[in-house]
Image (cartoon, rainbow, N blue to C red; front, side, top):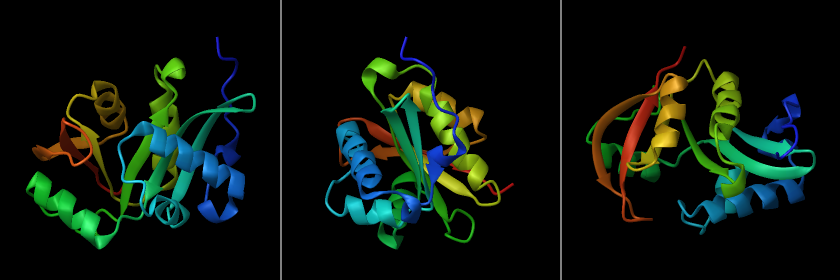
Length: 168
């Protein structure tokens, strides 16, 4: 067993309240996930709405974030899925979800629940690889619906799917 997971409320933080080490650790996990373009990632992390950290004792085992997506990224996702994704309805994007392979099994739900609770008054969208059933389950449990159609990923051979969750 990996020990007890922290339920410390400080495990969800505004990037402005994170130490340099925490931001570097978060970025390293996101890069290890292999789903994003590393170029400009640290700046995108620093402007996020909030970041979620999951630890066992002092060891980081997973991360996730609520992003403030750029207009270009939002337009690419909307075009790919074939539907509108207005910032007024969906200002945030859930993403950067990565759990160490040896620690997987239900952890993404804990990471993402904290983030969705922090922004329950805001609409959120998320993208997920078409073959990532575990993430689809997490998103559906959090009230996200699969919308639009699949489109090719620029990062890996699988298609991407769009999920949305309206503001509460």
